[in-house]
Structures are given as structure tokens and as C-alpha cells.
Amino acid sequence: MRITPLEGWVAEKIQHPKLTRRALEKYQLAKLQAGIQFARAKSPFYRRLLADIPNLSQLSDLAQLPFTTADDIRQQPLQLLCVSQDEIHRVVTLDSSGTTGQPKRLYFTPDDQQLTIDFFRVGMSTFTNPNDRILILLPGESAGSVGDLLATALQQLGAVPIKHGPVRDPIATLNIIQKENIAGMVGVPTHVLALARQPYLPMPKLKSVLLTTDHVPNAIKDAVEQAFGCTVYNHYGMTEMGLGGGVECEARHGYHLREADLFVEIIDPATGQILPDGEYGEVVFTTLTRRGMPLIRYRTGDVSRFIPDSCPCGTCLKTLEKVTHRLNGQVMIDGKSITMADLDEALFPLDGVLNFRATVLRENGLDTLQLEVKFIGELEPARVVQAAQTLTSRVTVQLVSDLPTSMAKRAIVDTRGHA
Ligand SMILES: [Zn+2]
Image (tube, rainbow, N blue to C red; front, side, top):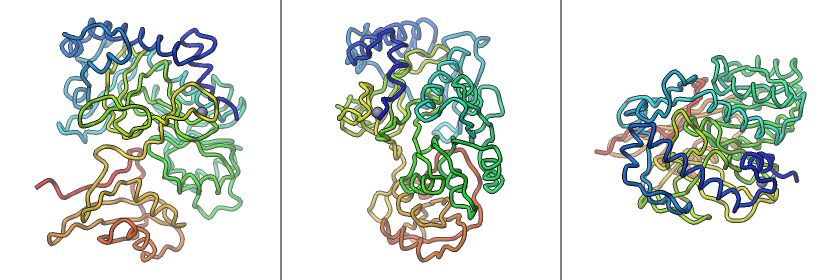
């Protein structure tokens, strides 16, 4: 098994030919110290937030720093900027699902974007060879969009990127895969599943598929691997991380992280205490090399843990277990907690299921889980009900011919309020 290419890349970035945890942590501490000073000097928000913070003398001192949250970004994004607005090349505006109703805006300099391109290039090299033709099923039209940065990264790798965008017409996309002699794809799990489950013969053969932007249900991974005869890898990232965060190695046992650019902690979401490796908590990260809008101890809302055993690939980089859900992603139905990941693992093994929308309603004083299931071929509602009933008996199922194609993370919609 080949060691993750992130290992050599991180070693080079920290200028330490043989990567060790000790050398990496020394680098991270120095970057954190410098980053805190930089943020305090340049950003009004951080000047206030970090006013009374003593200098860090060891990594564990980071525990004394306050957290930042999505609401901080929503309420005063320009206050977090550490460069003049002239130096900003890309602004990403995200949903407005937060408590304030305002969107989140993230600002990146050309150097910040280059850091992302570097990570994409090295991450993709895990399973991409020069000359491989890679179909990008992510938005890539505008300069600096995720698909655009990925295309640049693939070019630097000597591969051939083909920008496509989200899958809206699966048969048309399969025709492109066939015609363009595609070796690999990068896309959203349900979009790629829609390709894998088309009755299309012969199904094109691929080497690898990278699934990203949402958690990857095992059933989707299995269906995609079977359909294309390929290996599926997972990427973990979010715009706040600079789009890229971590990627699986050949062991496919969790993500290795871009540890020279991000310092990741797992905290107890209730107390804020840092948790030891192996324990589940909220993923929190600090940017080490970002200049436009650095984030310090940013609470992602994602739940995961560091896997305490070393990875079979032999890297000394940490391994973050695959993220399956968010802190606020659990709903209680009839006294039982259910996540989207639970529903995914129950429903996606059914052959005709392409996607579904889950909504919790209260009707006549009773909680009901309503599933609208997009399907292909012949799917009996009774089979879906049966699969969902392994989680809750209070379920209704409606088969639908379409659901909107979305890039957003899928989540259970809870309409019950908190009354
Ligand atoms: Zn590994």
C-alpha cells in the first residue's frame, strides 16, 4: 500500500525531509503563534476576541482561546478580514440557514486559493496518474470555484480535467464519460449514484471516483464501485477550510488532513474541552496559512474523532474518521434519535433508490417521518417502508419522479419547531 502523498507534501511544506509528529507540531505551534499575532494586528474582530490572550507556549495552550462560529462569519465577515479588500480575489457566499438569516461570506486571496490548489493536486495524486482524463461533476464555471481550482490542480498534475458541473441528465453524462474516455470522476454522492443506477449498457469502466461535499453512505460507495468497477475515495472539506480539508489514502480508512495548513481539534461540544484521540466530538479547526480571512478555533458542527491507531499506509499524519453527521443533524422521533446517515444506510441499499428527502412532521399530536423517494426502475413503496421501519415505525413513503439537483448537504428537515 502506498503511503498518502500528503505525507511527503507536508514534510516539504514544513521543510523537514522526514516527517515526524514532533517536527509537525513544532511547525504548527510556530504558525499558530504567528497567525494569532497577525489576526490580532490586522482584524478588528480578532483584536477584540484575542485581546487578553497570552502567547501560546505549547499546542495545548490553544485550549485557552475562544471559539469562532458560523454566526461570527455571518454577522461581521469584513471584520474578520486581515488584508485590504483589493487583495481579495474570491468571495464565496453560502446558505442563510443560520440563526440570523444572513448568508455566510468567505474571502480568499490568490495565495489562499493557491494553497487549495496545492492540496487538491496532492490529494488527487493519491489515485490519479498523469494523462488520466478526469470528469469534474462540481460547479466550475466561475474563476476560483471549486471545480475551477480542481481543474487547475489536475492540470498541474499532468492529468486532463474536463469540467462538467452537477449531474442533471444522467444519460447525457454517461455518454460523455463514454465518449471522452474518462478515467475518474469527482462529484457529489447522490449525483454519482444517479449515474451508477441508470440502466446503461455497457456501463463505462473507471479507475477511481472521489465523492465530496456530503458524507458518503456505504451503500452509495458500494453501488458506485460495482457499477463502474472503480475504487471510491472520500474527501472532507468545507468552504471555511478553504474548500479542501482531508482525503483518504489507499487504506480508505478515514481522511488524512492537510496538517500544514489546518490545525484540527476534537472538542466536547457541551464543555468546549479538547477530547483525547479516539473520542467523538465536534471538529474544530484553525487555519495556519490563510491570510485573507483566517479562522481561529472555528466550530464546524461536524461530529467525528481521530482514529487512535496508526493508518495502514504508514503515515504519521492523523486520521480523521469519516464524518457521518452534524451536531444538529439528529432528530428525535417517538423517543428515538435518527440521523440522515442512519436513513441513508437503511434506504440506499435498495436498488432503485436514487435520492430522498426526509421531513419530520407532527400530525394530530404524533411525530411522523415523511420520505419522498426519487427512484428509477421498479421500486415498491412497501420495500422502502420496510427499510425505514428498521429505524422508526412512524413513517410514510411517497415515490417521486424527481427531486431538485442540489449541491447542499442533505439533512432531515424538522418542521415541528420547539414549542
Ligand atoms: Zn493512510
